[in-house]
Image 1 (cartoon, rainbow, N blue to C red):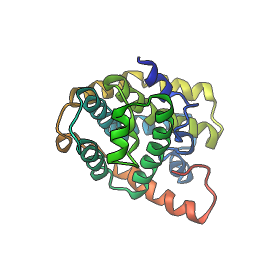
Image 2: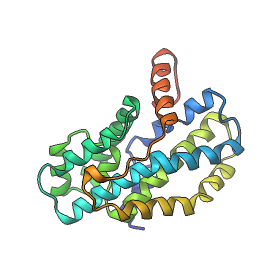
Image 3: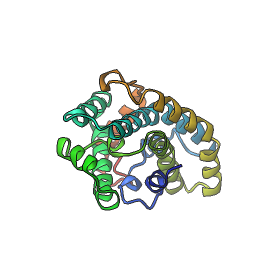
Image 4: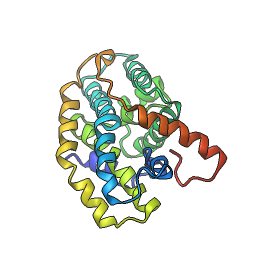
Amino acid sequence: MDLSAIILADSRFPGGGHVHSGGLEEAVARKLIEQERDLPGFLSGRLRTAGSLAAVFAAASAHAAARGVRNGHWRRLDLELDARTPSLAQREASRAQGRGTARAGKAAWPSPVLSQLLKETPRPHHPVIVGVPFDAAMAVAYLAISGPASAAVRLLGLDPFAVNAVVARLSAEVREVSLRAAEVAGNDPADLPAPGSPALDLFAEAHARHHQEEVRLFAS
């Protein structure tokens, strides 16, 4: 795996992912997840929906960067991901992480490509700002489950060793999602897949409302 992808997937990377639970906090609040045995199904489902969508657009973004796209492509890519994210709360969470990643990226990997992307879309979605085809897809696919897994430890006090074992057992699924994303990376933005999860969208909207009414540990 490329070093940049390892850095992006590191929990210490200052992209803002640590304040997002990926719907886990709302699921816990509804008592849908109460113990370790409830976690694998949630993580696997998130990986194959929200994680798959993120992986597709990360791979497409990296493919575009590698071939030197014409002006306007970054905005098209960003708008296509926007159209595939029906929840306003999910869109805002993605753009918040994108903004954090962009700030860190400008310091770590300054380039004309990054400058052009941010010129066209100053508040990009998180997957669009992430780089290098296969490893980019793998990095965001991994983040789709590692973030909620970490949130589960903090929210429920689960054994961190057991939770990390759950994440490790999903490695084959992460690789599968990443490979599928890389296969369609060169497609026109309008033709990219649109996997989704209505339940996660509803959780995100409910969490956003509750976050305004009471103190929540995570922003999403």
